[in-house]
Image (cartoon, rainbow, N blue to C red; front, side, top):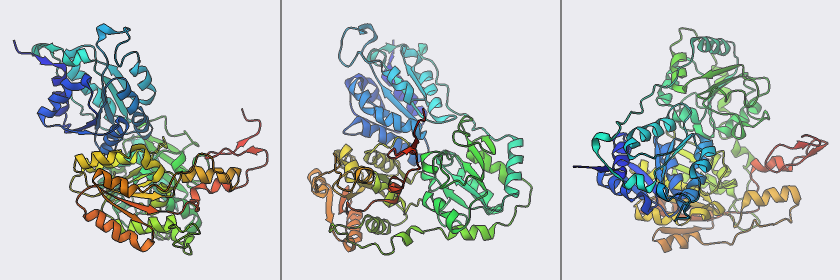
Length: 574
């Protein structure tokens, strides 16, 4: 009698769902599944650390707009991938993590890689978790896991497959049928569309803000452009919304930097429509630096509980962004002429250059000013590559020049704020788009978390170019300490002037060190032309503080306590 094991059932179900790539590290618990996946032609990208594997699956999901799949063995494999789970959870990235556990018959026997309730640990940072106890149920449970990851508010899910479940042989006729993953996205109510049209028609200075929800919404770019063809409203991209509006579109008003500048140079928006963009750290938190206090806010989100997290919206709409834009574009109405307002918002583009018009190319440290370095890097790589950013202030410097041709092409640190995501994100993006270029811009501190992933890039022939802003320390931490405790403070924030280019060469990659601004572009051109992974180590000045740290240097209101990186706290507040 023919039989099929659990590993084969996992592999077949994933293959039938369209999965062609998975990221992880080998573990014997998973061999029945991994061998079957390889036999079916699913590409297995093995990294050097499970955290990087999880971040790579995350980066793959962001780059493709689909599902990322990662595998990690029981015990330490699972605990290593936990950071990637948390990051995907906070950023709403659909991620399927496949892990294992010891044989169920050996529970509570102090066996290898047992004794940990992995599902209990995963539950707070996952949309759904489940332990498969029946081999025959694998197909329908894998489909259920994928639906949980993709449908509604997306996010990571964890499917634990005990080793005995994966290796057990069962009769094919006992196996459940896969149940599919096709679910229609939710559309807005007619009443919500009517009220939104009313608010926009009454606005003098409307502003649309696209976020991660728009970037992940299938067809959102086409639907939004169709709307903008009729209603010429300026659009800003939140951090995860770059690329939703095509570059050069007349309604493209820039990103978060421009959004914060528009009130000063063009006037305050009176109606702000958040299209899949969440209020919080990336949109000015509870302050009004990006969304004016008097603006009527319309919040469009898949999660009906999200609008109102900060401030009371004038209108809350539970809908997919593409569906909302299609509904608006189809409304039979004459939209106001906002051309003058649109033109004024364009004046905010590139306003950051005025801040650094007199910046020296080299500072007193003898190293390159970080703004100058970011400007030269952005010019050298051009508009086409996918850019991944990783680090504290280094992310801030390169984000002055943020641009993307399509969603998922300018990605980096999210709500978790965890450094070290960059190599994994870059690997996932490069695997997703093998014919395109991927550039990782990282601080030296951030790169240290997953530096061995240079080996992964080489083994899998991923020609990623890594650009290191090497300021010999944890820049954001250093400057935060100095702003709060004085300029002489240096407590666990210093790093040596490591030659990361030489480390890259040791792995077999192309490596260069740059110490003068005029050498940045030629070095990056050579790195892009190297035909293999490459790293450019730029000696960046540690003595320049990014403007995102400015709040720490401002006086706190009387009776308040300064809290680094967050709002000041009134004395007596409980």
